[in-house]
Amino acid sequence: MDTKEILQVVDVVSNEKGVSKEVIFEAIEAALAAATRKVAGEHMDVRVAIDRVSGNYEAFRRWTVVADDADEFDPEQQITLSRAQRERPDATLDDVVEEPMQAVPFGRIASQMAKQVIVQRVRDAEREKIVEMYTPRLGQMLVGQVKRLDRGNLIVDLGGNVDALLAREEMIPRENIRIGDRVCALLLDARIEQRGPQLFLSRRAPKLMIELFRREVPEVADSIVEVVGCARDPGVRAKIAVRSFDPRIDPIGACVGMHGTRVQAVSNELAGERVDIVLFDANAAQFVLNALSPAKVVSITMDEETHAMDVAVAEDQLSIAIGRGGQNVRLASELTGWDLNLMTEEQAAEKQEAEISGLRQMFVDKLDLDQSVADILVQEGFTSVEEIAFVPVAELLAIEEFDEGLVDELRSRAQNVLLTQEISREEQLGDAEPASDLLEVDGMTRRLAYQLAAHGVITREDLADQAVADLVEIDGFDEALAGQLIMAARAAWFTDDAQA
Image 1 (cartoon, rainbow, N blue to C red):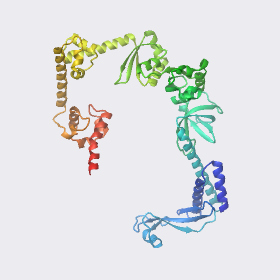
Image 2: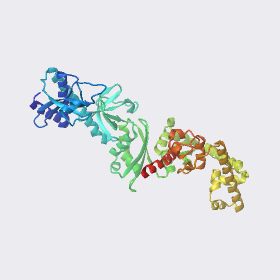
Image 3: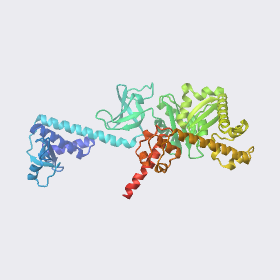
Image 4: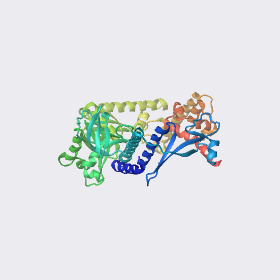
């Protein structure tokens, strides 16, 4: 391989493959080094350097500097420190010592090896370039042509000699796609693989439908109308939530289009998937009402703590609200982000009565109240003894049936109940006493400190040494609380380090 031929190879391959010349030079250097080892000795460490302008190249044999008393020594690739310093006084351990070597004539086998290395390096560079080019487009819709079928998966040609994989599990069920068909899919991932495509597509992703509406609806493309969210049962049914930033434009009408042409175009692209377009509302209850359409909702009860809603519908609307196989309520739940519990009006009334009865009995048992007083507390929205113990006095006095004496008695009884419960908890925790520095940790309560002490966590330092998994096994701790207290205990470490 003469110098002129090297420069020609670099120019031709770089132009044909769209790979930088530096990558080609490095590939040829690696190939020439491999061919040199094939001829001069397989175990040698060889480096070849090509002049980027003239094409001239030199070969160097390399040794790594090791200690004179090294346990293992390979004379083919290593040199002792004392010997290296005779040639180069500034040599140190782990340095690389080089010495020019005679260029070896490359025969047919060596040249073939060089060609293989060049081809492999160029192929790797092409694959890296594809991943680098498509990574910024993750989450975007791509259009390609089905090239071939590979064990149930589709290889899609995106153009420019770039292939992508549409796996069987990312296809729409029962969709009939043939070789040569044009398909739209969402780019899920782009990563370097040794073989096969590096781009991975999906036709099941909810965002694909959002991208299709962006393509079909100019108002969405211009950000006048926004598709807030999407929930899909791929190939069967989907729900999207939309809103308009221009009060003159109806977002649902814009997405449906004249005679339904826009939504029909999206449906046809996704194997006939039916699309329900609902109006987004910042009010969670109203959003759920819209999402459950066409079912008519009678009442909604929200539970902020569990992020769930009890939705009551008329008897004849229950099957509509649930949908075939629970599809309607499932999609509405995914779209709104709330757990929806559907029930009839009668079931809702029974559940509410049971909850009211339970609260009434709890107040009667814990506070030793008459049924009538307990009923008033429930009607006024009180749900726990803690609320009664710590609610402002004025709020209780605002209740028509209550006077100052009754209010004082209620608060006194509630506070006594809480105090009794706290004493009982501390007795159950045994004799272990938390240290004062544990009680001073930010976010720590007396009850939690005694809980920790009962499990051997006595001091702030003990708490700082814990892992979240250790604390969640203790009653009263979840992952969030455990992590918060551990980090608060460790805060002193950083303060001490800063002072030091």
